[in-house]
Amino acid sequence: MTPSPAPLGGFTAPDATVDTGPGIGPAAAPDPGAAAAPEPGSDAAPDTVGERGRAVGAAMPGHPVRDYAPYRGNGLRHPRQPLVEIDGLADPEAVELSGPVFGVTDVTDLDADLTRQHAGEPLGERITVSGRVLDRTGRPVRGQLVEIWQANAAGRYAHHRDQHRAPLDPHFTGAGRCLTDDTGRYSFTTIKPGAYPWGNHHNAWRPAHIHFSFFGSAFTQRLVTQMYFPGDPLLAYDPILASVTAPEARTRLVAAYDPELSRPDWSLGYRWDVILDGPSATWTEEGR
Image (tube, rainbow, N blue to C red; front, side, top):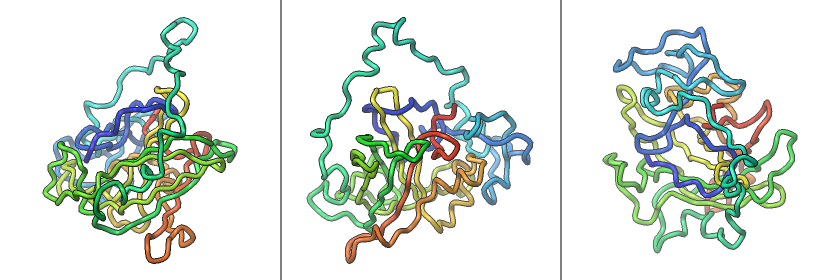
């Protein structure tokens, strides 16, 4: 697991909620009134999404509360105080929040192809991940900076804090970025990540996933989430995914195989559209 890259510009500052890397991902929590969660320190693993432990607490619309007991690593990492909003008129230094971020020349095609960033070919199943970034009315969000980071095909991140006994790939770093086009579309070529153990409970394994970050026009505007793959048997056992208690919201985090995006003799295609706000918004780590 690896930590997220430093923010570079963005949509809404995340205050916590999902695994972002080696032991630093914050987490969210569930709906009130569900079954009791495993006791802290218990080896009990969730059987299926939502069937084991849902912590009690009120959730904001579209977001679970943060104290989701089955995600044990969340305990000391989520904010316990209300977020502070900055008054740009009262604080003269707040002008920096709307300062310049990335220009088009800062992002190249090579950034979006994680299989061409080194001298050799990375190992694993080559995939194309593409979709559109939309607002609540379905309009495209143009010029959006999209960043991804992920484990390699063996389930290991190129990061010193990941000590999983799986091989590193010298030809795969696992980080990329691109800008959305005029239709709101982004596209990455990468390697399908492997599952990895993460120590949350007995025999805990994270399903294959790719971390996504969406930036707006300021350094504090950032949304972070994860994309999962269809048909993964580990989805039903993942406390992080289970913390998103609304079934339709969980479904929106899973990409769809799309043969139209597959490239003959080159890569399998997955489509994953992202809605930034509104009732059909893609669940993110913002958690407000």
